Length: 346
Image 1 (cartoon, rainbow, N blue to C red):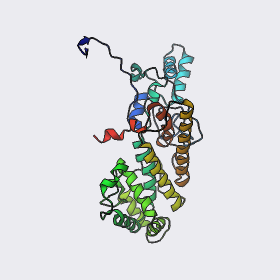
Image 2 (tube, helix red, strand yellow; image 1 turned 30 degrees about the vertical axis):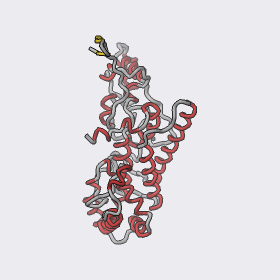
Image 3 (cartoon, helix red, strand yellow; image 1 turned 90 degrees about the vertical axis):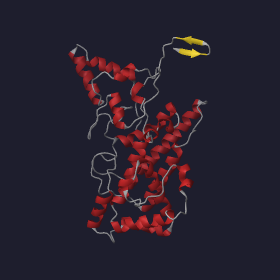
Image 4 (cartoon, rainbow, N blue to C red; image 1 turned 135 degrees about the horizontal axis):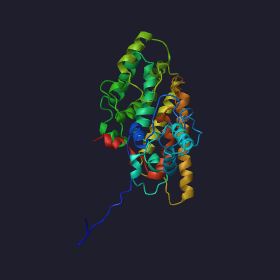
């Protein structure tokens, strides 16, 4: 029953689903995509991109259509053997379970993509606990206890003596105080990775700090046993995918810091409330293209500065789904509208 003023009416509600907020695993379950570690036919819920080459920033994604996917499933049930066999092969190629999705009962307001694009990219897991986490872990994996303690001490001297009140950093949404040092990565949560990045960038702005960071790339002071000890103490799974990432060939200190600066700029950008106006379609499309190109440039920098030469390299889901951010923004607005970090705070 619905009351409006002094009127009471019996109504039937038609609920429209805009999108679901969640991580990659929960999203895969909702849309029926099955995963794997190598040679996955489709790496993402939303598009048809295979795992092989999914880190290619020049590739144009073809987003899956709800109607076509439903038709393919129905064909897999056909009494005609050849038709059913071909349909099942098509689903297998797309890493799609041959099953009727529960989400088919939901209304997405006539959206042609349906559930497949109704799960926008989760920046907390893809970016903060994915790309950023990997970059920081890659840096500290090559450091022994002597160099790590030197970096921790320098950052504590800069920020730990009350020189900058925590309240002054709240607007940035990052934490800069780490009681056990920023190199103790086991204690870092999703919301704190950008604080580690910020501290490293500020440290690099001083001559002493830059010298400390550059020592990460030489072989003095810490022998192999020391480095292995530090990895045992500080190491955490980088959260990107399978593969041995112990020997990461970071190009140089300057390139690494430039990459971290781009992370900070991107983080500040996607935390905004407003972006481009959509009243002029041509203007909106141009701005979206510019944003997409900038994002791809940053991801190219990740590959260049932090190459992954073993396992699947950067051909992993978290890396590829970053390319879908602008597509999701044109549909759902600011990234904070679908940020899963909001739910993790409660």
